[in-house]
Image (cartoon, rainbow, N blue to C red; front, side):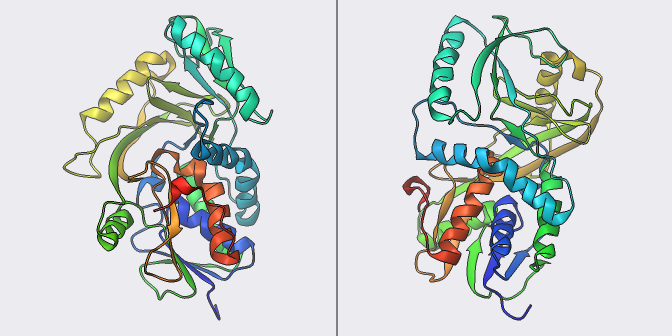
Length: 342
């Protein structure tokens, strides 16, 4: 590559999607991952792309909505450029409703979705039908939203990597020189470095544990039961996760907390009771102090930018993050919400 317009440091979903978006706009891109692609949370198992509830609307929720609405076209473009699947499908999501108050609140949220979701998806209360892929609901009612989607994190990472290379970009594991503008998308370690640079806490890491089971429900909706995601993937597996741990001994070791998650999923969904566990995973997710993605210029470092803090919403936010960061870095157009700033 004769000249690099943009260097992206970090091979997680933010780094890869920003590099892809820049490359498809014609920029010469170099992505550098120090350890391995998807070394952090982006190499996990779950891949739930789910919206915030349609109430108390704010710029963060609007940003996420726009990202989820553009996700189908974005991930189709990744597959077209790479020739590889990403595991994306807008399968929707079911949630059980525990009592009359939850039912009333969900009806109110249906009205909010009708107003806010641009008629492109719905939030609705539906009667349980008793199928095997339905969680038990004390009220006999479920929330069904059609905005939620799923993505296979590792398929998506492989497809993004291939797409960047197909568009003439470099993807390097190890180290290489920075050239052009530099975007730092380096996860929890990057938040620690940024905190040290700023002299104040920019964010931290939160450990998550998840499991992958062999059960083919690839066309079924994802489920959200008691803060737990159950996500059927395109390859005939089901992901269960995740814990949120602020203290830990080993960031990559699973323990009884994951056993509890698996047990709760099997209790809630009997069709999973005999499904074998294929993989147990643990990793650190980057959480910005604001709890929103952190997108900004790096103070005191001209030409350097931050894209970090995806935490639980990184895959869902990634298409829009890639768009606004490419706008800012390549074209000088700033569409980043104030709440995402340092």
